[in-house]
Image 1 (cartoon, helix red, strand yellow):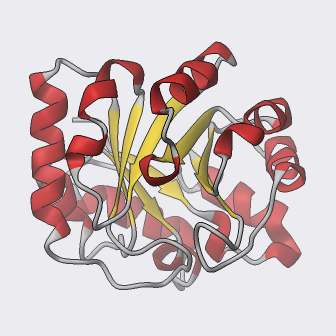
Image 2 (cartoon, rainbow, N blue to C red):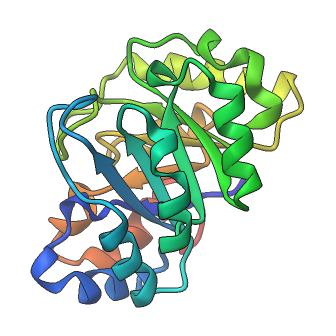
Amino acid sequence: MTVRIVPSILSADFAKLGDEVAMCEAGGADWIHIDVMDGCFVPNLTYGAKVIDTVRRCTSLPLDVHLMVVEPEKYFDDFVRAGANGLTLHAEVAPHLHRQLTRIRELGCRAGVALNPATPLNAVCEVIPEIDLLLIMTVNPGFGGQEFIPYSIDKIRRARLMLDEEGSQAALEVDGGISRETINEVWSAGADTFVAGNAIFSARDPKGEIAAMRASCGVPA
């Protein structure tokens, strides 16, 4: 099974962002995760198209942009122009989810849907053919460094079963509290794409931490 390690720059040192991104690439990261927060959907405010453009100029890795915002469709065009390769919006703020996913794909981007811990999987069951990525949040979004919610494992298992039953090739991504201590159980439950911020950027050897997390899934670095 594929294992993608996706460092989240939410935990990076922005005074040396280019170096941090280069370190992730040198360490074998598969994608770079960029969390966009509007201070409304989640209680934090981060960054927009300018940072996406900056990261794009630092790396050729795919940019995995997570839109924790209300009215996410307002940002699609600007973020794709800035260099996003994937856009993931939250089902909780997407009453026209099919239309929004279709638009992301029209822009040539990977279309993803994220679910908060309390949001059931049936929020996306009707649009599985339209998604390229399903993101299961294993913390309540808004801040880095939170502890993994243990009972999320069952939700990940059910998400894998749902995707497999529909014949979907969508990536199953997990974000929140991912570290070398939690990643194996999450991978065993069926996830293949792992967002990690604090565990990587606070490690003594961040490059080595990326390899260690991959190895924790039983996959050579």
